[in-house]
Amino acid sequence: MFKLFAWLGNICLSLLQEMGKLLLLFLEAIIWLFRPPFRFRLFVKQLEFVGVNSLFVVLLTGLFTGMVLALQTYYAFRLFSAESLVGATVALSMTRELGPVITALMVTGRAGSAIAAEIGTMRVTEQIDALTVMAISPVQYLVVPRILAGVIMLPLLTILSDFVGIVGGYLVGVKILGINSGLFINKIYEHVDVDDLYNGLIKAAFFGLILTLVGCYKGFYTRGGAEGVGKSTTQSVVLASVLILMFDYVLTALMF
Image (cartoon, rainbow, N blue to C red; front, side, top):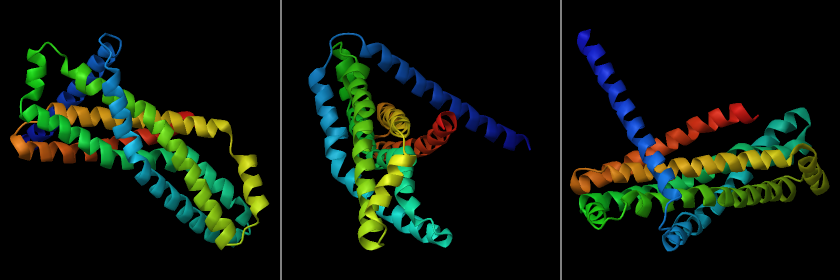
């Protein structure tokens, strides 16, 4: 029994230590965000890496998410003769939930893992120590541009994901399933507000912060050579994905 309590206590202490180090890294990044020198070139490079390079996978997943959503809701609503609500359902689902969440998970798998691997490699090869020796803050040089890029690019990617998802729903609902085109669009106008889009973009900004912060954190505290880099990369994807889904519930409960 005592061994069980000791085991649970060690797990709780480890979680608290991890949360503390993650929070301290975030606070240090916030401080360095407003202190010169401002590394604009690094920031632009991360905008391209996190946002532009993730564009294809985000558009592809957004399109098929909207298409399958239209297909499923059509067969469900047909039981109640409510096929006209397929368009509004697809638009609401994409703007409120699926757009931000699917986009964040895709960017986590593509960019979040790469961030952890890149910074982790720099840690085990002592490049981060070299930055410190040269009086360059590793947090300002490595962490701040990535977090800022994630917060800015995730909402922009989410807008595109929402759009192509609704287009995909339109193609399936109108062109394949035969729903009236005007009715499909009018129901979207009736039931979808600008606040739905805004709230989804707020979620996306939070998710961008989470996935970049977790990737930087796992890479920053990597130990154990190449094996440690692999573990940090895997842990960053799993932890960021879980936190995104958890915060999605919290934000949804607060917003809607």
